[in-house]
Length: 399
Image 1: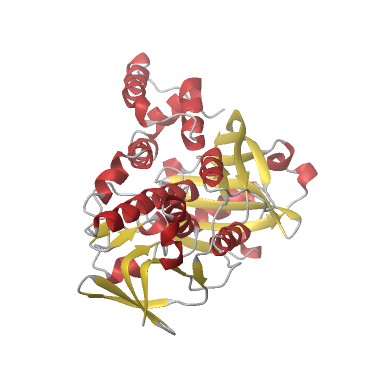
Image 2: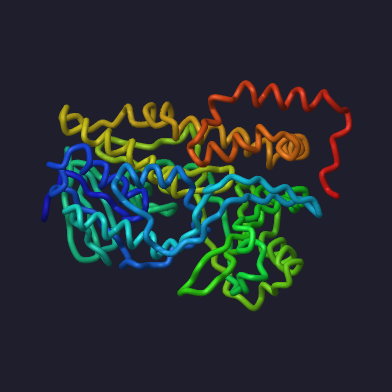
């Protein structure tokens, strides 16, 4: 049985960030880290693929450039019925394909001298005194620390005694070939969030993201619902939305994937084990996972390096440090705002967003890491109260 100091289960953005941040903080640990991946890169990952400036900042810190095909986006469009709101912010996002992006990250891990073993699916984990035994389909390993970076259906989470947590939330998507010269998302370098169907019970949005697949131009079109008790028929809503766009859903392969919503009351660690990324919980407002995954990895890496320095592996402070970090504070704010935007106060909250340029910019800058939503919490609540009392009748935002 091989022994490692750290075993990271999963080689997506969260797992790679953890490995590379450990390497960056304490290079001596690099040859005592093992990353396990159940598939082989490049492998399919169902995702809209948006990389905000926040991602670029974190990749720069790790010495990684985005050298995979992407579509640059400078405008975010919100739709509600016939109403359209465009928010321009140069460099707001780059749309990539996750199979290509994740393969690039995995290659970086190997190039930094960290062991990555692909097609080695973890089937069980057990505790042996001060170590964790990791069992795969072909091998057995022992580690002082295990990181669950294995996504929303994390086996680390299931086998190491973590509570089930909140119900998983769904997203579904299709990819349709388009003529870039005739498609607004390509012509105007934008992506679209359509909130038209929230009054029908959808606690989320329908999206249209431009992307490149094998050199051809496509729209990644899907639906996100963060409802813990779904009231909407997602397939029917997506079908209705696509019909308005001249697309027949039945002609395409519908891909579906669950997400785990961030829960500030959740459990993120047990002795010798940490959760990161989708295994821990992601942004509930728009379901954006990549920036948070990278930030989770950085926080976890510092905890791990410190644990070896002190020879203490309880990780009892991990949750507190995560919640007090920029990531934790922003996730808590996104949770609060999503409860308002997708809840009974939808019209009040959305009409404020529709009419308040400062709030629009703040939201964009938060996701780009140019500003912090949590620093403006009191101001946001003041705006909502002022907006509530300003008019007894909410403004109509559907033209």
